[in-house]
Image (tube, rainbow, N blue to C red):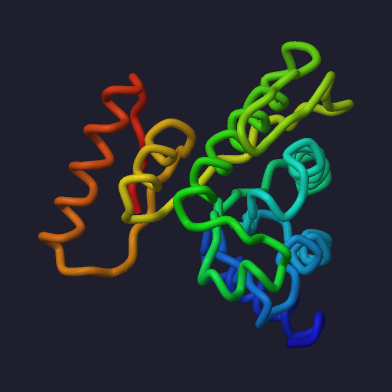
Length: 198
């Protein structure tokens, strides 16, 4: 899709009353960050749900990119945390961790990002997968972009309940969705958190 066509789609979505649009991510499509950044100039209210892919760029850089996007778009960035797709695709990006390791790294990654967005001084963090020293942002996003995070595995539930704002799930039979939401809600309760669901 050309930028001209994407601008037409974004304008149509905005004029039709859509609040936000999910942008795809993966080796098969254009980069969502760059594409949506080009669309903020021709839209006024439409929000963009952009993939945040822990491990493919540093958490400090991702936090900075999100802060810049949020400032330039006047608060129209939403982040879809994509821990990783299929193993073979992850390897094309240089990521050779297995699924459980990716979720563990994702938790550390989101911990650093949330600390940076809080703006309480330099962040020092040393985990199993992520390490930063004296990290801080020149600009704190206002508001911090909401985090959307899906995933059905136990490892995904742990990370989602601790860090996400909205837990989305696939279109599944209502009973299966109800069970999944109940499980995630229970994990969030343990964390003292309340999530939105989609």
